[in-house]
Length: 144
Image (tube, rainbow, N blue to C red):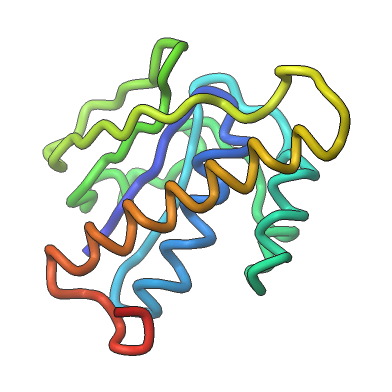
């Protein structure tokens, strides 16, 4: 199975989703992420993922056109994560799923407030991905 997570900047939500899905699905699923206007992986996203033992430091923000045509042709699920902005779209035979989550980045506040927003997004993504994995029979027994 192949899953593509998408949001606009491919810097926070989709990057965290990619890291979480790689852990939750283990090697049984190929996971990628992309955006319509990629930036850089947000350092706070890296930090909150590290808190739970997931290293996304080596992940890179990618534009949808950076994803290989072979992967795009084999996508089973495209999961968009935008809430207040217009989500990127792709032409794909994969099932489209929308999980509207607010972008935790760029809303201002001190570091602790930003950490709270990013942790909330991380935890919501984790719950959604675990539920999705359970529903599709892919959840590793240690994460049930």
